[in-house]
Length: 234
Image (cartoon, rainbow, N blue to C red; front, side, top):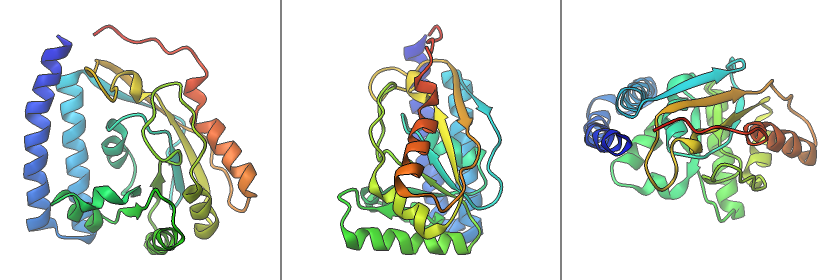
């Protein structure tokens, strides 16, 4: 059953996404129209996940209101789409290589994605911070995966330096987000039916020392790693 669900998801989501990317370049272009189109794409993704894979989202805690720096755990592709649906048009910090993908990269940049060079050069960091300032000026939230990459359930790598730079420059409160998507949506292997939890923590105020904010965020985004999580049946 799980294998059939995965095949149906692939047959529906990937061709449908290609159509939506082309439409975005033709009719959405940029700005508010592009952000609305991205929301439609995220809703399509959730429809496919819900009805073809049997995956649902459970949101715990209070969703952020107004501009904030949302620091999320990253375990799968699922949250990169689902958080566009759940949140209000957040600008997403993503690795620069993704903005170089034909068609998709243009859509991401038009949406207002913030590219980051994971090698962490000073020039790349300045470019990221300038882009973040523009987003804040537009009154949008910023979504960042501060550990820098997807990790398997149970892994808790340290935060990358870019997070502290964004926290300092934007002056925004941080809303930590723990999640457990990797239990159902592994990097390799079949996706499984069940419920993925998004747990939003209380806002952390701006202006804290780097060591303190990193420790608080690291602990908060890993709260779902500290309890036994049970896999649902396939």
